Image (cartoon, rainbow, N blue to C red; front, side, top):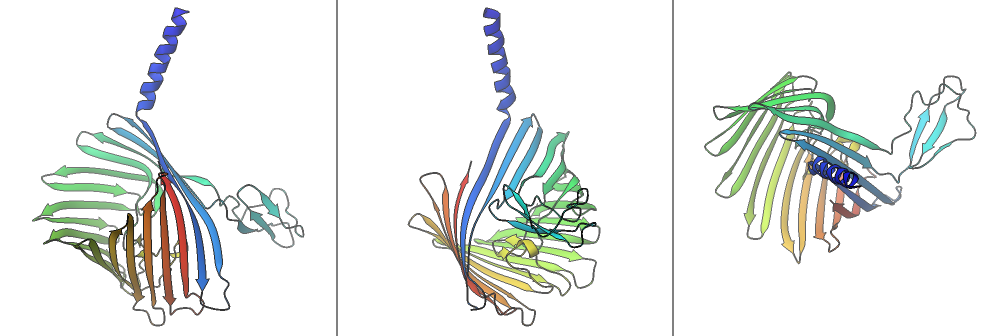
Length: 357
């Protein structure tokens, strides 16, 4: 009996040690969005949606393994047309979060169903899975991860990525492969209080500079391409005026380039975003933010222009408040005016309840 007790105590101790370097974090949010279209020919909409993320991190010395799970909008239905090579006409399959239905007037033949369509649109995916470690003074990162949004381009992830970085004589040096299916070398340093970095790419370059001068933060970011008329550039300035923080940003694209970032200025990620821009359109944004009665209040004005008949502008007010329950409530009101279409002018009210753990 004593041996059994000792064995149980040892097993419990080993399990505690094994779990000591594993952490689980995540977040979930639920949104209600009401859109009021100005056009009488377009119906107003009310949508409930939610998004969840889960991150598992394991550490052993200098080595870390990260696995991120993500899932979006499990309550919505998705309609997909499936081509069946043996059927006279295609069949329509509607997938829900927990079931699938097939139109009764069509026949799906075994062995060919779903060959040209996707049914599992509402699901949890492993979005990121990567390893970080050190070999001497060199930091290594390998696997799949999101390269992050910025003011000029959308984010993206791809498997088989690799990065190696180190510092040499005051310069940070990084080699990356797989981010855009080709090699990149980045060199960064700080000179006279200005943070600088230069990235050499297969078909272009990226240049970044940032500093703070007499209380004004300044930022410059350029994505230059070897393809004609495809350069993009971003400028930003910010400062505090009393209790109000002020930020101004401008993203410019040449005629064959498109702004696709998802940042404070707006979500311009094309099909996945709220605003799908055209080549050559520029974005100018101003933000005012302050605290009021325990709430963070933010106002943004965004102007999208430089392409004839496609100018778009919107004003956005965001009120964020932490709740006693540990959740965060956020109200977002948007007033959109779009010259590019006659039925997209609208006001939108979005109510969000979110919690992180």
